[in-house]
Length: 240
Image (tube, rainbow, N blue to C red; front, side, top):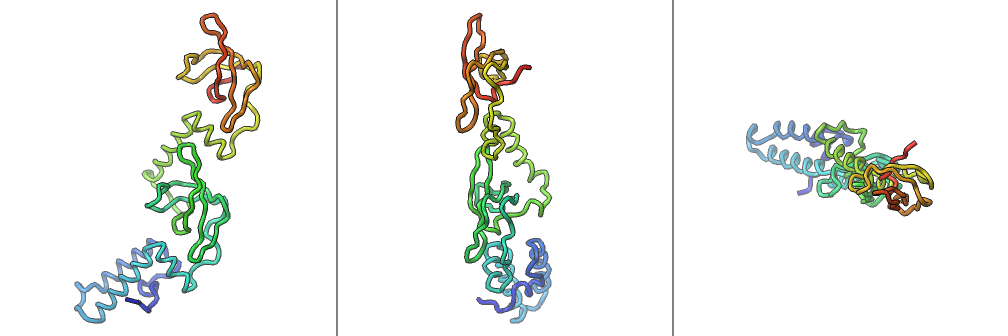
């Protein structure tokens, strides 16, 4: 059935109405015109059809955007810019409720703007594509404790693991360009899984940088004998 009346007028809201305002308006007008409160007439039946049709369209972000564009309600500029921090609001996406940063200038399609968003999960960065209606500006919302906990746990899991933290730092541009230790530096081994944990040694060679981190050959004494062992930078502490 095609409804000729403007959906926003049907619900009594402005085209700029938030999703919460649309939900509230629907409850009010549906209660007002519901057949249980009125005689079942052609007029009330038609009105309820209009209300349900309007709500069905405007309560779905994708359907709403497609409806807005031909009527001129769609803005001609993107809502987010490159560098904007956004939260994913797409339940079908594995990144739902994750926070990321718009990585490229948005691209305008026929019906919406599309964004490439960099999201870091467990120290690895992904850049998936999202429609504008699948994103929220983090400044637009005040997250509850339950909404913040997954983000807090994910952040802690990354930053509390030296390897994950270093991988995350590199992807975000935090990686230092120069090694922390030089040849001859005295260092202490701080990795619990190494048999040389808490041993003191000396960097025996110039550090080597790979795609993720600096590596050091460290001479340590074990049972009175010198042993040269390789360690990643985050496995060592400097001794002044």
